[in-house]
Length: 239
Length: 307
Image (cartoon, rainbow over all chains, first blue to last red; front, side, top):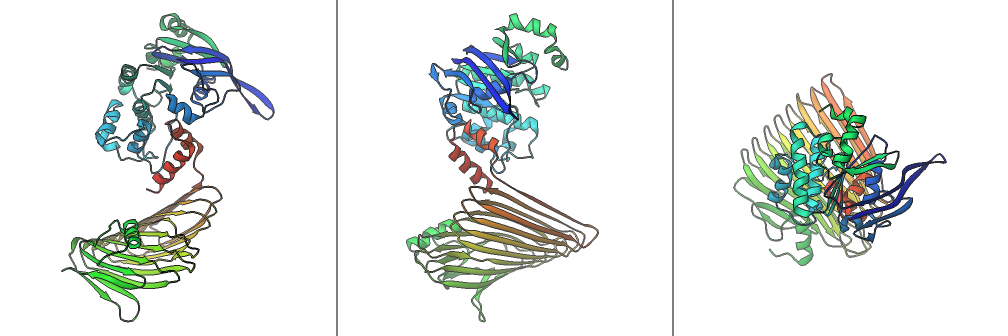
């Protein structure tokens, strides 16, 4: 169970204070939770606050009742929070196998690494020894990022726009990856997304706007109004 | 031939073996040859006019390995050696060289190796060279390798050099001349700590038609160490040349890259890339989200970079 108590985050640029997140309070325990909202609504910032990459300027964050507001990124990772980046990071010299092994936190055989890669639709043998560098496409990096989240298998996983750069072919796979992760480990998967097909599998949808929770409810409560209001319709219609 | 503990450790670091290797070898310790073996196709002969050896690989020799490690364990020793390698036409071999210094005394220990490679027509060579220093004496551990490479037509040489630990001062010079369709690939890895300094200076003449050279240097300068990367590639014919200096600086380390590419022929195509900077913050953050501490993340990034 993840709990945010009146969490806020602001930055100061040129002496002007700007509120990015304004007093967000949430209790999240459902298997699939989608966070959506317009660009600039604070979705990614919220995920980074949960992962510890940003420190909130106000409020508290609790994981299973434990106050983790001031815990480091490393501590939160070890407590069971995983964060799959929107824009995966490249590493000269580290291979796909290195990163998946680090993510799993144990010694993995080539076969183990291949299993994770196959789940995200990458022809495994070809990728194991590839460096995480500019030779990989954005879509490939994104899938490796998702394979790393699977390898971690923690009780709370945050995905920041996992669909970006993933083609239509693998879209169904992406959803089955989420389902498998949940089957294996339970816990919660929080997915930041604009994608109707992802919102459609969510048990709960949280809509952020201007750094605040605008709407929060089940898929059936939220999705119809989102689509008619056009928040997601413009994007959904592209698929 | 038996090795003492210090020699065994140095051999493991630079050559990856602890006992007498199979195949041809020459082991030099503190200025003298302490063991040598030749094979049907590989001859090793002591030079008469100066310290060093001549290594002859017969034409057509395939798949053999030659080990020529150098060990320096005496403080205050300055060792200078000339090794000449003649790789016969159509041969395809592996040479593993390296120098390990263990200096527990207060005098400097220095090894200057001048290696000259002569590759005949169509010869292929993989050359691996590792430099390593250890010992807690006040004396410096100094290595100044010079490598001279001549590749005849259709020849191919790949050189992997690494200096990861413990060498206080190094000036590495590599000069190469390539004939028609000859190829040279160099991968260099250097890591410096403390107040160490390393200079690496490549000079490549692409003289033959369709000659190609690819020089990649990856380095890490930590603490107060300094590194200087110099490259000078001359495209004197229809040829291609690529040099790359990729460096991570940490603490107060510094790196300078001085590339020079000269196209002296209208169909010479030369590229130089240099990138120097600290470890990207997002790389550290990503590894920390996998549960590594900042220090562990840094070690992973550096060891991957120098792998």
